[in-house]
Image (cartoon, rainbow, N blue to C red; front, side, top):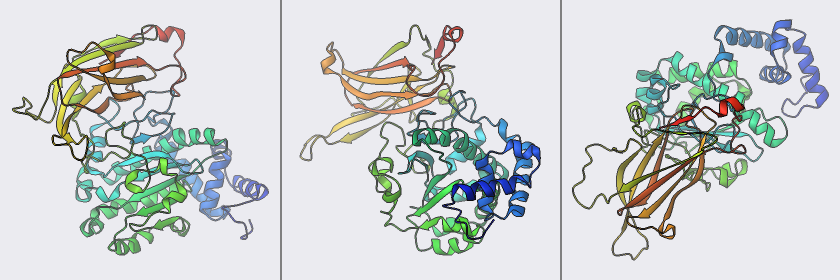
Amino acid sequence: MSATVDVDNPTPSQRAAAIEQLRDKLSDEVNSYCSDLDIWRFSVARQLDTEKAAVMINAWYEWRKQANVDDLAVAQPDNENPVPCAVRGYSAVADANVTAGIGVDDAQLRLTRTLGGGCWHKRDRDGRPVYIERAGRHIIKDIPKTSSTSGLIEFHVLLQEFLTRTLLPECSQLAEETVWQQVVVIDLAGVSLVALSHIPALNMLREMLARDQMLYPERMYRTYVVNAPPVFITAWKMIRSWLDPRVISKIQILGKDHAELLDQIPAHNLPSFLGGSCKCSHMPGGCVPSVPLGNYPDLPRSAYAHLRHQVQISYTEPRHSFVCETMPVGNGPTPMSSPLMGYAGWLGIKRDSPRNSAPTSPTPMRTQHVFVRFSTDRGRGVVVEVLWQPLGSDSLDDGTLVYPEALFEPQRAPVLLELEAPNRAGQLVVNWRVANFDEGQAPFPRPEEAQIPIQLE
């Protein structure tokens, strides 16, 4: 191909010619496996050098076959696999955090506790998925202790496969054109010089970046590194030496002034801590849950096991309500011996916190934060709504909507919600119902499957 081709804006004939030339270098087996988009991505990664691109794509094909990558348990609408990290704002899978489900092994949970928080959070202005990483909150020294390099790479591969198989097809459908790249935001707020110079972690990062460039080329449209402190310059000089020049050209290093993020991502899709208006207040952890940051409760696997309240719901009897009394906390001795006190196996009070109803209020109104934990053994998701009523009240007019209706997929992994209720004697009413046909993308069950009850616990 001519060196004058602009690989970011090729004409249809230029792109077709590049694809044809690379296909001529590949075996029938590899050609049948690869889509035209695969061929184009590898061509671009090697600046349309067909010889180099052929070597690269053949190595990629052999790796996928030897590692059985196509058999990975990737969360998609037609299965019940858990999400590999937090997700916000997609319909292929419901909003979710990583919890200790059957399909989530302990190694992943341990790794998640050391990472500052990552989330696929909605879309940019052109419909691309946005991935946000709170890298400044990583507990860097613990990552090599928690995971091996191979384990970290396996986790990263799962993330990339989830992007490729689940999120990009949804984004393409919404945009009515092929969306094949993501936007990445790396937030370095809180990072230290010690973290940026931790050699074992940097070695792991170097290996992961090398694999990423070889195995998932051109999946990144642009990366924004925000809240980069001055000490990052030294680390960046080393990191950029590991990257292909084309990858480097897509990375923008920004300090605390990162208003240009709004040129890429609309305010309602950008978290408030990055200058947007989104808070995702319906989810524990908000837009990007982070165990190290402390904005997300890190409950052990045992907190989700053998919940004592168990019922059956179905497509013919789709609703269930659960009522639990709440009593004030924080006004005297509390029976809590741990951060979580179980109520009927499903509910637990975490803490109480003051909330001023008005700036001049002489007595702050206190609220209690209540956990709701639940899971299902099958189905296509449930919709949850939570109300609170003063104790002794029979009128719905006295009630408060604590949590508006939201769709979750507890068949993938347990769901943990954190609610804020008045710190008064009252009743929490949790309403569950089976998701309707037009809610979410999970396929509706066949008639014989619809007769099987769904275990809710």
